[in-house]
Image 1: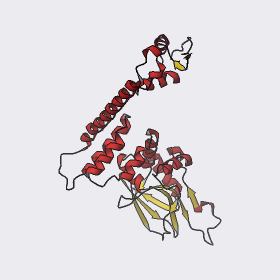
Image 2: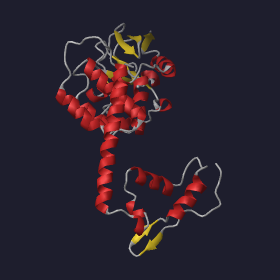
Image 3: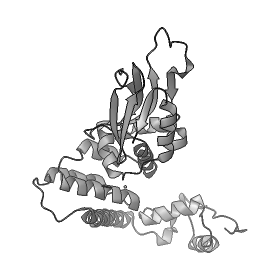
Image 4: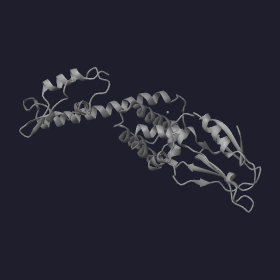
Length: 302
């Protein structure tokens, strides 16, 4: 599976009428006219637009035009139900496109599907809806692909955090089983009598140019996608080979000497599951840097 013109008029002023803060209809009309040609509306107009969309703008209307609060509450509840229904139907429409008409041995768990509905119904962003659709299609095609823990973690992710996961996947490698993912962050040789003071004994890969500064790695860890503590492979013997899959490419690292190690950030089980949403997209710049940085410790072939 593959994831202006500047207005010279005054801004809206809020007038106080007894204990109610209202925006008059004329002010709304004037501001709408002043801002209609603007690419980016003011924060005040953005808030007003959101309040109208979610039917919580009643108190901003003139007193004589305010419907009873009970009526406003019922209308907001109805709009909210309709929005959730529309969100779910959009996701189902997208998910159908990712499903095949081939028969599968196992049936999807109805309890899982019910939990999916409860978690996905508030998702209105089109990009995120597409990712939720891929989750649904993946689970229907292969039950057990996405745990409820993964769904709950994904529910709390923003679109920017989802993009950060995509960056991590573009430089991550998988082991032979494809069940373990990691981002190689360096290579080294264990210290010994003859190499203890050699500067080339340790090589660290700077991940910042690939959108993964330490702060961004922390964000991934906070979302339970990677372990922030770096880990290492066991020491090798000269000639030992370590094989990975790098976004569809077969990658073999051959130890150039004894006691060589790879350091890496490992994906959590949740991160590995959600990585299925991201299409293979190898970063050639990272691969070239990896070859350069581990040279003399490991030889890379692909």
